Image 1 (spheres, rainbow, N blue to C red):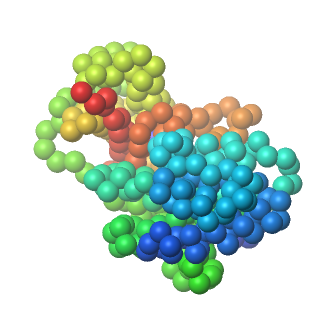
Image 2 (cartoon, rainbow, N blue to C red):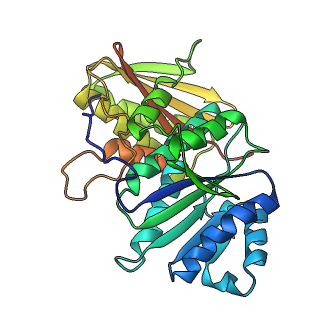
Length: 322
């Protein structure tokens, strides 16, 4: 599976400003977030705030009569997977008048029970620097350092060029370029041991069998309707890429874990050279390059690892609650 490395712009050289808003109490959150939001209101900038419900309530109360000048709502009603959430923020920006400066306050709920989920949100925070580069946006991402583990606070400082606290803003001394940060995360994609629930080699001649197997396993696990169709499409896109750009035969594996299915597609080709592959929407006039991006948008998380042995792509799909 070959995806060539691309040149990505250097964050911090355009009109985009990305802050990690680090706080340790409701009062501390308001002390840092209120000046950020008020500055936008006073400058007639559109302001979107999607933060955890208690923070949304506290911020609305602190703004008083000015609360109606900002779009404030709970993040729980807005956030989805990292890729789909990032697309929603970009859609909001694209709907504003051209040339107008904007402010976003966005607070994800970190899935502390899932290592793969944490890595996916960490990638998201880093990729924001590239996806929003040169857009006239000031973006602040709140982190509750009292509740979140130290590794996530460290991630905040590595993925945000600016750190915002109640005392003001400063540069992050440990900010890492997105390509380098995401490359390290990709290298942490686990090599799963033990026996998978099923596996099969495949090539161009039996891609139909791959699709049929993926669909039947998804249905047996409880997926249905559009969710089942999307699940099958995402795995099919990655499997097709493995054959077209990798080395045949490729291999499909299924891992059944509590509450999710994990499909792995591996090949021994030259590998994915761009660590941000599939993270950014492809050029609408481009002839290709949509498969990995589409699979990432459909799945709940997508990870890949490329090394001297080839490439493994892991797609995670949450199952409906019983």
